[in-house]
Image (cartoon, rainbow, N blue to C red; front, side):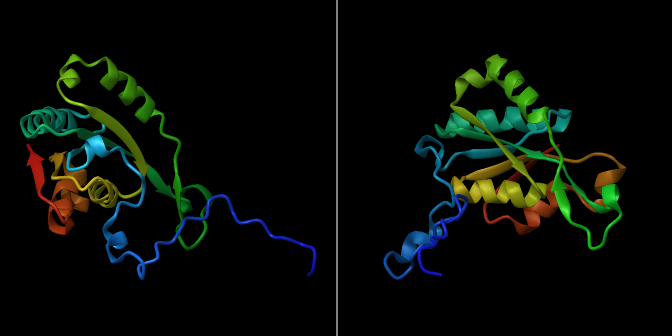
Length: 173
């Protein structure tokens, strides 16, 4: 079709050319602030156990002289709940809790001790925490333990993350 151009999609990601730079595979997927490289990743959802994990992570980052990457993972629900279709497809549910948590954290005095950022993700909590840890080359991931019947039935986030993570995982009771 002469004379017709098809524009490249705006959301197309660049693919690394490993023949030029063999170390390109180890570089983070997204550009991140170098101040937070080798920082401490902490999962935070506002629960009591995540608040304890955040307190521990703040002390850990302060002692190491590194930044703190606070990660909130938004909920994902299968569309079968809503539409009754097969196979289940996951959709991101709008989660305004990240905005609320961000405002609460911005007003918190205890976070003035270390540089920090809040990262929002959607998906599986274990996968997203590990992915953020990889992107920032984190020294550790800190999570709170799960209490209750849901954690016993489906397995806790801390347990699943400890089994699959490529970096140290600190579980705070």
